[in-house]
Length: 113
Length: 113
Image 1 (cartoon, rainbow over the protein chains, first blue to last red):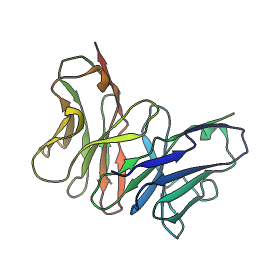
Image 2 (cartoon, helix red, strand yellow):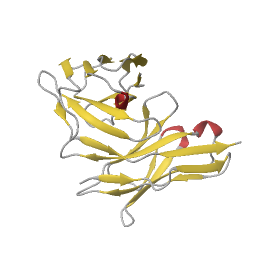
Image 3 (cartoon, rainbow over the protein chains, first blue to last red):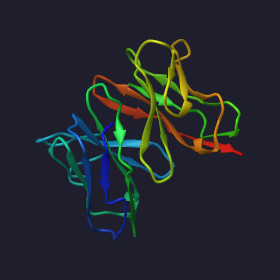
Image 4 (spheres, rainbow over the protein chains, first blue to last red):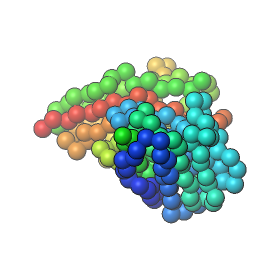
């Protein structure tokens, strides 16, 4: 299965600032996704990162707040903009190719002060 | 719409005893069902999947799951629990039309020595 590296693993940020999370995969993958997970809770899909075009956002998530880039088949970034304490969460990158199951990075644990 | 439900927030079992983590699903069309496990400070790890074929699916770490179409269930099982199995378990269903995964609320498994 693909090896997924997600950076940073954790961060503590001031409200009003922005943080960019990186997701690097060791092989080319068809699809990349970004999820949010409140500690001990389920996952909520933020968006599907599309190579070379705008990401596809789920209801309740907008590009201005969560801009996403995917310049190639192995890399994507998620930015959490103008952060507030409500954005404190775990952000997870996942990838999928063909009939393989979805695989996840270890996540970024974000706390906003 | 596709969805899965995990009726138990927490399951407690003694080491060596069999364990069951419950999942029911609601899908239109054929179900594509998955189980993932999450250890502390880690992303989700794939355990097993059901696409078609035998109703009993075997996966990683000695886990298996039984697909029951009449009861719309996909319960995760293991004949003999280990303390190291203690983790958060997620059931998921894949919507093949939109290539999305929907995750259950998660079940915390506690295996006591």
